[in-house]
Length: 57
Image (cartoon, rainbow, N blue to C red):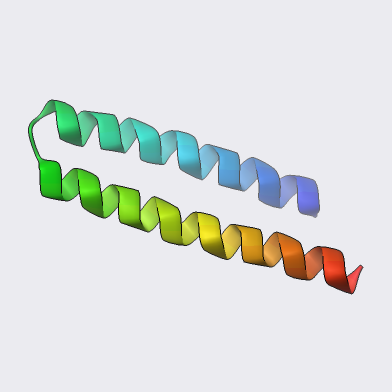
């Protein structure tokens, strides 16, 4: 289960970075910052899940 969560986090980050690059390339700074914020929130949630899974197991 932990490996699946790590793989999901990696894929979400890769997609987020691609979206960030496309937004910045088109000159949409606010859209890029929004993408960066969502990526950061998803990463924090993912790391919290990983930490809680390790404490329970």
